[in-house]
Image (cartoon, rainbow, N blue to C red; front, side, top):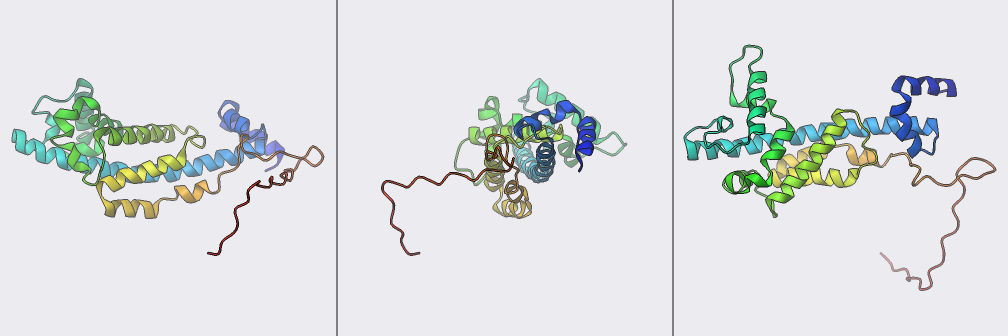
Length: 248
């Protein structure tokens, strides 16, 4: 793109929106646009992976809640709260989900209700307030390969929920710890189902895209005052105690 075209694009995307990308790119508009494009691509890839994980998570938790509610309350529709355990906020979320599930005149089914419940709803079912009432007797079973505690799952799903919200609102994520969040995503999937974990991992493009991330101001190589091009790095200092090379 020409400088004039870049200026038009900045206006259309908004100067305010591109400002953090310009800052991260040393106030270079062309580099800022490249970083914006990278952010869009990695957000789309992460969004797809988080979508797969969300379906896996809600189904695993729903299955456990159904069995538990049937056994304890003779009512498989756990979202009716037969044990009077859920908070007002959770019940409000369920009421909205039930309305959305039947808004076109379709009959209500558990699957349709579950599909309308947000990731935030499932996140908060993993909160400490439900440790004794839902986690220990029920939801722990949704994560049969977990070698930790409820907080490990709750913290992981919280972090992924916050990332998913940033993606949904088209906010920047390139400055987030994406490799660590990718690992968190895969951990949560593996805690639930190794087969599903391998499927999600095999389809995920996040790691390959991160390898193409443009440098930001914090890590951009210094430029030569004469040419404006990246300067050659100084030679690495010799180690006072070099480690001898070994074969293999």
